[in-house]
View (cartoon, rainbow, N blue to C red):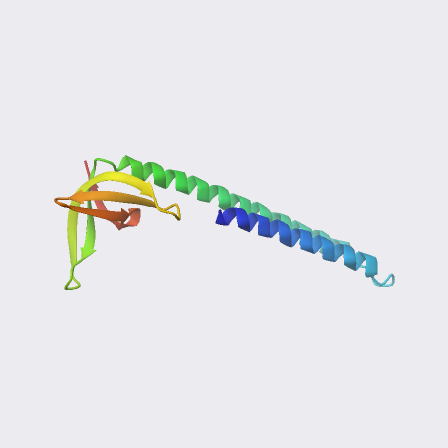
Length: 131
């Protein structure tokens, strides 16, 4: 959703620029007209910005799809992760991925069973994977 708003923002900026340009053309001094090359250059920059934001949005969607596929591929696999103990030390724990779900922000989370305990982890919390 964030990338869509970025594209809308680029479009809004371009529309605001066009309104400003029209106002300048209507009120310009006939003895000092606006430079056509400068206007064309600015329009081209807005177009490039819009295209870059669109590509960024597309890449974000592809990355989300790949992350979801990877997370789902971990179901049934034995993974290791680190937790912080009460003394502040890090302890490596291993368990089996039982479930994958998305949190409200759309991030993939794993439910891992390790003995009698159940942990909820982000993908970047996994330190190793075994069959």
